[in-house]
Image (cartoon, rainbow, N blue to C red):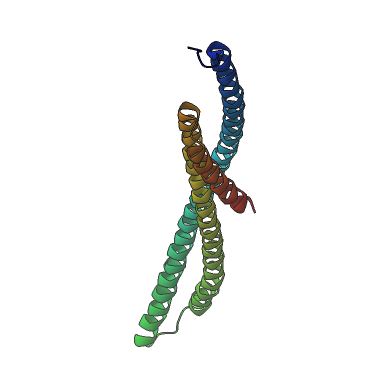
Length: 192
């Protein structure tokens, strides 16, 4: 009885393995390349996140210093107000005793009122500086959160890339690219 045609299984098996290796090797190189790019983007986003939070902390510190200086000015303002009230009360004591008010008491009281105007203006200027620094710091903290979120998305994309390298699953690779793309969009948005 004739046997069927003889097929060289060893040669066929070798060719199948070569094809799988060739396709798998290229896919692994693609995974490695995209993961390296994602890691570089994550590093850049991480640096930006750190820089923005540091700058925000400096601005918040400056804001606190301006608040302290403004508080000092308002205390100084109140001290001048107390001096003015004491001076006017002294004048009233002289008047109540039917004696002439010493020269200069009224001028001293008016001087304290004039000084209060300048002190109040300086306190308001310091409060304005405080508010500007605080608003700018809040804006930078908002940007920091965007950079930090983009780092998280890049890290998830890199982790999915590692899973892809182990499983060679194209859907997992697509998820990795989607997460990386989302991280890139968020990173670019924060840079603008």
